[in-house]
Image 1 (cartoon, rainbow, N blue to C red):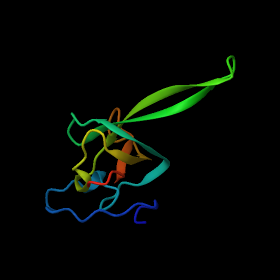
Image 2: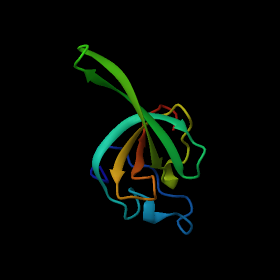
Image 3: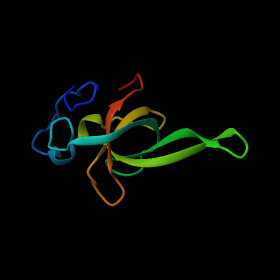
Image 4: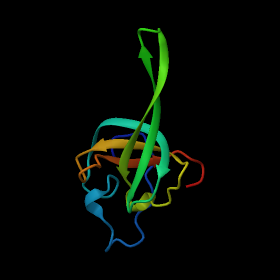
Length: 114
C-alpha cells in the first residue's frame, strides 16, 4: 500500500539515472486521487501510453432495460510497468493532468503474466 491503494509495489527501476520520476506514482512525486477504474488494454501504439477500454451498463428508463456503453481512457504507463500488451486487464488511477489527454496512470497489471 505504497500509494494509498491496495496494489502491489513493482520492483525499483533498473536505471535510476534515466528514469522518469516525475510521472511515477510508486517511486516519484506523482500523487493519485479520485477514481480507480479497471479495464482492458486495447492499444499500446503510443510511447509510455496505453488506451484502456471499460464497458459498463446504462439503464434506459423508456424501455426499462440496460444497454452497453464503453469508454476509452488514455493512461500513462510508468517505466516499472512497461511490459503491458493488448488484452491485459489493468487498474488505472486518476491523477493530475499529465498531458492534453492523459489524466490517469496505470497502477497495476491484473493479468497473470507480468
